[in-house]
Image (cartoon, rainbow, N blue to C red):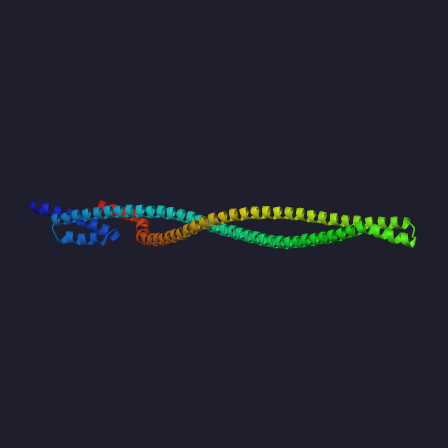
Length: 304
């Protein structure tokens, strides 16, 4: 009886060893080693070793699952963060382009205003010079006409005095000489014609003076209105220049900040790309072989 028991125990142990050896050839060399141990050692020891192997395989399975989950989470997290940073970088690039365009436009506007102010100052200067020239000409015309009037008035007065006193003297002289009286009448008529002509010349000179004065007054009023309007326009444009210069300064400050932000985003994207590369190096093989490795361990545990 004792012999049969021992014999039966040995047969079971041999069959178990054979199973382990076969599994070892297919799955894990440790099973082959365990099969040899089973042939040489007690069954209880082998059973304990099998249990330890199963526990170790379960730990490996769980650790690999945990590692895969971590890889999936980290890759997804990095992917989403990369998408978010890429979107932010694109928005920042659009902001940079808008700010650059705005700064350029404001600079062009300020230059245009400066040119307009310079042109208006030039026009004001030219108008002032022309007004000064015209006034000088006016002063010359007035002086000339007044001198003409004075000379003509003096001549007219002299003629009047002469022709008032002369008739009696001329009449007496002509009576002694026996000259006819109709000749005296012609001479008197001629004298009045000369005086009348002088009076007309005086009137013409006065009219010319009045006309020149009116033209001067009108020209001065036009110049003052032009100068006033131009000065007001220059002040308006200078205020606009100041406003635009302030906007340009603020936009340039925003542009500097936007460039710094964009550089920061570019750096972060480069770091994320490097991190993604590291994650793929660490996780790709694990994830590609995950199902096969999990299945192989399951088969190994089943064989135990």
